[in-house]
Image (cartoon, rainbow over all chains, first blue to last red; front, side, top):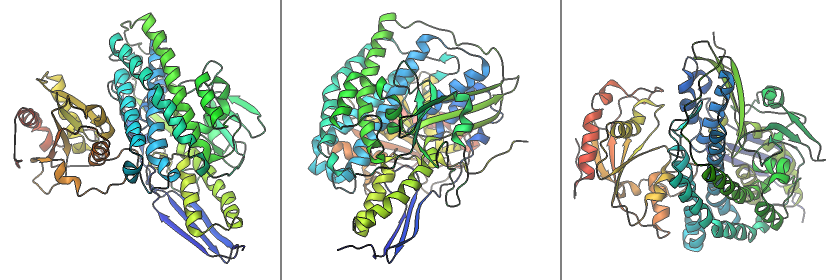
Length: 440
Length: 157
């Protein structure tokens, strides 16, 4: 029987297992879609205003607080932008240690999302807690990997959340070589858990909805590695057409605009929307994945170009493998060269600096201006989740008619929409900066 | 090993008192048979400490408990478990949620206590309120005394 004449009323305020507050509102009357919205009601947080008047040495400490889970990424984007503004070129050692730190954050966040936030949907549970009884080994493995992530970040940056040792010009305190050797042992010891992670998620991939909507995918990219710390902006369309842009052109790529039902801005580039995050990274940079990560991707039949947004969670699993194997190579390199004491690089000039890193949820931009006395006179941040909001909305608008056509019940439609939003792993509270602050 | 851990948001005035106390302990070399760590807002950092080698953990955090601003109270983590919904709805999660999850997956949960400090201000500011700042040394000393003492009861001060 076709139920395209059904009524559907979904009013989710607020969606669970995501960071921040987002609403899903759907009204279908007699089969006619009257409302289908992804709403963001979060308040703006004015970090752009908080950095004004601050000395360059303080700015990253403030902006790391934009996000508790992506605080490493915000710190790195911040110090890189500040260094660009101040003409600071950091050493190769600093760059390698920061890459190692960036992988720690990606690993930490992806473990959290895959196991704690997304897996309950795939295992038919409302949250992670019922899984303790039914899937104890999986939850224990999740916690062990989370523990590893914290030890990893803390070994490099003092602490994982709001790192203390990453400063403009280098590191205020360098990790000792013994700590790096111990970290290498821990990462090596975690490889069986990585393999088990792939097998666990592989066993439940039949729960991932079959939904495709080609869009534009934007991430960092470079020719040397799977870019998460440095590179150009790269766009790839569903026909495989790629285009690179300088990071300094980020405003003409993100094109933020205001949506009437969202306090977070929307973004668009070549199409009405674009996607950022693990799937966008994988679509752009599949060739740069480590061989072990490619093998994992092949098990999921995941390659570039994938247009199913639900597969973002699977791309995160592939990245877990890539993070560990990339970091083992970095550690070998750093350990073989030894850790050398370095003096922080001093500013050469004061002006504007723009930088980008990949945080777990996608490409992140920081942009600052500094006066001659080293004080910040203005800042701008474009956060990954606000780049994804428009794409989520357009996904909704394609997905809902398909679900109705498939005779899905209201409960099934609700779950499908919830899972779609969760697949983006949104950090909603970070994304809200609706008001444009004009400094006078 | 014993641990004193600071938690809170240093961007929200007295909410950051835990982190500031840890900084005070570290800068004044007061770590004596315990380790002082600042977790900021992320309770997941507890995981590496939940093992047989950890005897006691004291978490210092700002807590709205109806006391006079600046006063503090020690209490057991177990005493607040029942007030927490056992759902993880965001990325950061609470201390109770993390320890509950870990305890049910064979992690060893040591004695965990909380030193709650009643705030005067939770406004957006990187400065502690005058009242809290003036008692910083007291807080650090009381926290250190607590971690070195066996105790069966908790007191308001």
